[in-house]
Amino acid sequence: MCGRYVLYGPDARLIEAFDIREVPSLPPRYNIAPTADILVVLNGASGERIARTMRWGLVPSWTKDPAIGAKMNNARSETVDTKPAFRSAFKSRRCLIPANGFYEWQAPEVPKARKQPWYISPTNAPFFAFAGLMERWGPREDPLYTTCIVTTDANELMEPIHDRMPVVLAPEAWGGWLDSATPTSEVKLLLRPAPAEGMQAWPVSLAVSNARNEGASLIEAT
Image 1 (cartoon, rainbow, N blue to C red):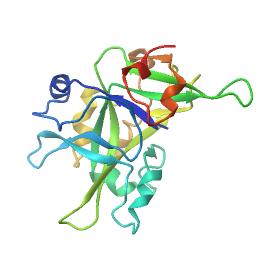
Image 2 (cartoon, rainbow, N blue to C red):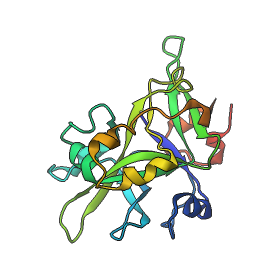
Image 3 (cartoon, helix red, strand yellow):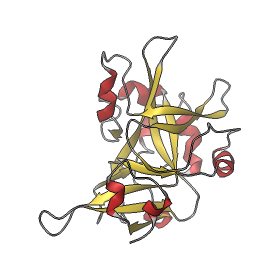
């Protein structure tokens, strides 16, 4: 799964890395949790990439209660094309979710001990690009735009920490993922663990477990 992540930019590097003209004004954030407004990158009407904010937690267009989004921050890659909540978005409403890194919690070896949070970041690029899905809910004149992160099995780096991880897309896969015309059979092939060689991880403070805590100190090794 992916329940917390980090995005501190800077904006100039986001613009360069994702080939977008501008990004919405957001402060650096080191403990982004579900239901927050987050940055996504998608194809615009003319095919160019654009960035905008959406609420983290997918709300299917057919649901009556948008509160369901609080439980829909992740979509499993194995069932994303068949589960009713995600299959429509997977077919034609895909996006990228930029991140400087993400957190995962390692189960303790000692019974009843607290889980140890780890910070995972890229080694050969400034950002991860998570595979994301997006939906529009509510009246056309005042819609709610929401998104979620697709997850997959852990790679060799992540296995000792957790059995799941976000789908991290390589730059050469971004075009096909964002293009709604790409057949879902081809898109499904992208949903695999990223190579461990492009990632690094270290343990961080238990303070990150509280979503109210913020600041660059949260990603420092302990």
